[in-house]
Image (tube, rainbow over all chains, first blue to last red; front, side, top):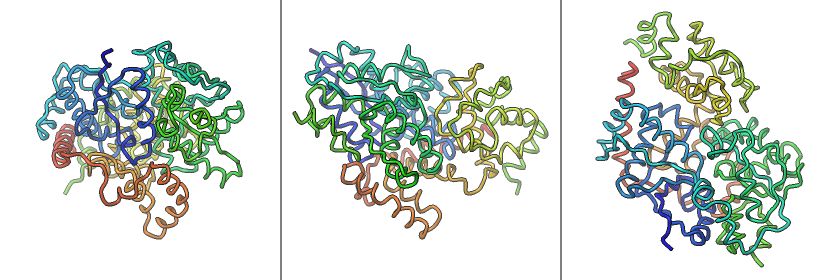
Length: 300
Length: 206
C-alpha cells in the first residue's frame, strides 16, 4: 500500500529534548500502522504563535508563517501541511487565509520573503491541518480502530480539548462548546470517555508562565473536574495544554492543599498503546506524572 | 524630535476610531461591535481585566485614546479565542486585542512592567534569534526578568519541575550552550527587519 504523504511542521516544542518530545515519539507506531508518511519541511522556523503579537505585529508574524508555507510548497509541493501542535496549525492556517484574502498583504509578504530568496505563489492555498484532522478525515474512526490489538479496557479518560485545537478553526462538523472528536478517539481505543465539563476551558496558555496564580486557578478546575468525574487520566491534543495541566499540579498542591496526581497524556499515546506500542514507543517515559494504567497495558 | 505617538495624535486629531482603523490589525472591525457583552462574559481572565473588549470597543468610539492605549486589558489575552467564536457579529476580537496591544506597545504607551508584555517580547526575541524558540533560555529569561535575586528565587521554586522535565527527556540542559536552530537565521533576521520596515511605513510609525 502506498503511504499517504504529508508535509510535516513539527514546531518548536516537538523537537528532540523539548517539552513535547514524547508527543512526537508517539507518532511513530501510528504512522507505521496507518501508512502515513510525515515529511519534515526543511529548515522550518517558529510559527510565531499567538503570543508573538506584542513584538511581532501583524506582517512580521505572518511572514514567519509565509516562509514555512513557501518552503513547504517548494520542497513538498501538493502535500497538505500537518502539525501536531494546535498553535502551529492555527498560525500556518491563519497565515494562509490572511495572505489569500489580501493581495496587498501577499505582495508585502513576498517583498520580505525576497530576503530569504523565497516566493509564495499568489494562488497558494495548500491546506494546513492538525494531525487529528488527518486521523479523523483521512483515516476515519473505523480506520483508526482497525489496528487496535490492545483495547484500553476499563481506563476512564477525561478528553480535554482545550482552546486552539477547537477555536477559532476547530475540526469540521464539531461545535466549539462541546466537541466530540476526542471522546470518539478515546472510545476508538477501547477506553471510556467520562463526562467532562472542563473540556474546552483555557489552561492559561503562554500566560501560565507570566500569570501563574490566574492560570493555576483554571488548571485547578480542569484537573479537579477530571477527578470529580472519576477519570484515571486526562488526554489532550495540545502540547501547551499537556505541559501546563501536568506541570503545575505540584504547584497547586503546594498552594491549595490539593492532592492532584492526574496523568495528562496525548491522544497519540492512547492510540500507540492500543496499537501495541511499548512504554518507550508511546513516549510514556516522558510523563512527569506517570500514566500507570497505560503503562500496565503497554507492558503486557 | 517628534515621537511616533505625537505624530499619530497630530495626524488623527480627535478621531481615535479612524486611527485604530488605519493602524491596528483588524481595527476596521471595531465599529461593527453592537455592545452585546458576550466577549466580556467569555474571557477566562475576565475577572482580572481593567476593561472588557466590549468596553474597549466603545471607548475607542468615544475617543478615549489614552485610557485605551494605557489599559492592561489587551495584555490579559490568553489567545483562547472564546470571544471570537462566540461574537454574534463575528468580529475577530482576539486579533483586534492583539493588534491594540501591539500598537500601544509600539507607541510606548502600554503599561510598564506588565508581565504578559514581558513574556510576549521574550518569546518573540527567542523565536527570532535562532529561528526557533529555545525553551530553556526562554524560561530562564522569564524567571530572571526582574533581576538576579528574584530570578534565583523563581528558578529554585520551579527546580523540582525542571529536574523532572530533564529526567523525562523534555528539557535539555545543553540548550543553554547549543540549542535547535534554523540554518538560515541571518536570512530570517533580514526578512523580519524588512517586514517590520514595510509595516511601520504603512502604519506611519517609520
